[in-house]
Image 1 (spheres, one colour):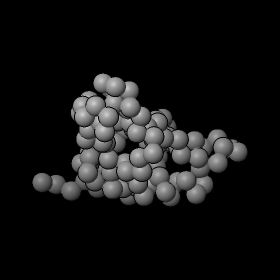
Image 2: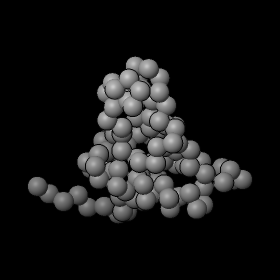
Image 3: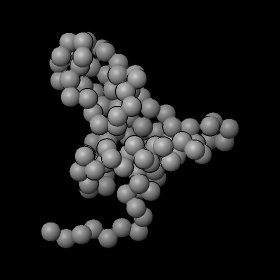
Length: 104
């Protein structure tokens, strides 16, 4: 198994992706070729770092069955099931860094 050479750290790459458009952790995983577990760990820190300078916009995860919104969720990992209907059909949260001036 070969090691991928990176010019930037994974967290720096995640921040750059989040500045482009809203993305989910699954999309980040595919774009950066790292596991979802690893993305989840780095995403939390990248958001905290970026929020010092920019406004981070988070669209919460939603249950596709009953519409429950995971609005107070602090974890960046996708929820495994809905606390209301117990279904596992969950639309992932998406993350975006708004870099427009005055939007902190």
